[in-house]
Image (cartoon, rainbow, N blue to C red; front, top):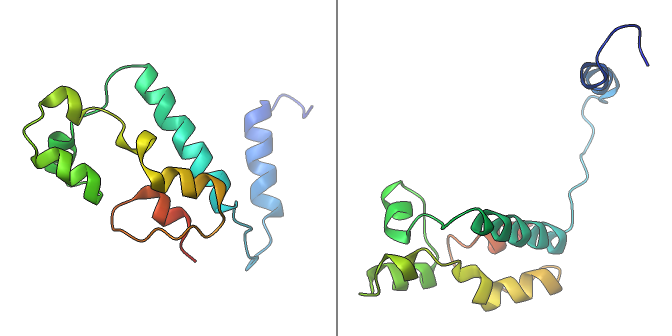
Length: 115
């Protein structure tokens, strides 16, 4: 490799040197972003329960319409800590259709399909 320079530092320096100025960066397809997001949430769940929707909302994070319904329903913290995206039709559309027709606010899948 490079004389005594750790590999990570070498590639970081190289990327800084070859970055074309004003270049348009390619974006990953929305379907791929949606699948990656779903996989990351599943991995997060595997390590323990998610924050409850009440805690998430109190921390200033917006909730989608379905999460908001569960948050205000008298269902208890166990239900509020479930991954509602896993059973939402927005996820199914977002992972299968580029430019999926989903429009409600605070849905991460909508953000991937904007543009």
